[in-house]
Length: 342
Image 1 (cartoon, rainbow, N blue to C red):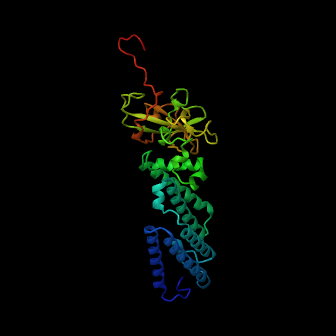
Image 2: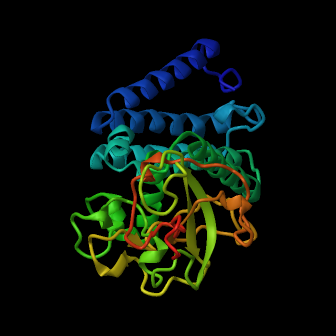
Image 3: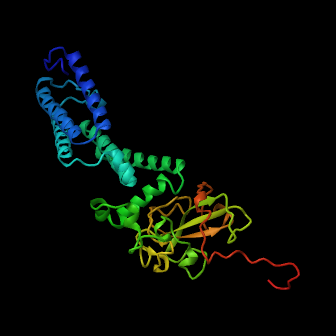
């Protein structure tokens, strides 16, 4: 394309542009900030001018932009580079937090930010090639779905997966407050003014705490998924078994749970109910969507073997919940030898 546009030493010029782009990329990663934004803005301003001139001189010759050998320069390339230049200039003026800083302070938003950037890149490439919106939308959905599966396979409930889920909950419950004001995602999701207590630990209350002592899913909920504790040493339900299974009761899509997000019994010493937008998804797969986990049920038998729960055997493990207890999780009554009672 450079040769067709009459650029002197086109092969050398192409290599110089490529090396410059890589150098700027390294600079932005190593030292993000106003200077990096300004350098990127200047680079894309040059690319905008080059695309405008090259489109007139090179005719139908491909520029190889975005790794595509078939698309000649045109108005779309000019508009894309110009938009990138303006975005970089805005970053130079506003000095937003780097992705590394964002990942340290607000990991959920960092993951969302990165996913949106990749989706935007996919969309731009397909737009420049004239590909329909439906195909790149499908690619974006596949990317997000694949990322979720990788996170789910690699991390426990209380590590990165939980932090992302809490960030998603914050975006669902109070999007403007979460995005525009300082503070953690957990602080947005925690109801009321609780600054300490179990209501702030990131987990959901047991169903027996909000369902008249019954260790079952309440009305207006369905079994959305389950996970396992492999080292239970407590003296309540499942004592002596060494394991516990936890079942999530989610609200039905489009039917928010009565009372909404709050601490169980409106007490900061109890974990929250209907706050965390999350779903493992091994149960009742015919019900689509991810909703809030209203409460948790404890069983001593694998949920996939319990009739009526409609769960498959996909195993998730989180031993950090082994110490979670509630007064209503009473152990099963046992007949004492010779006592004559039950």
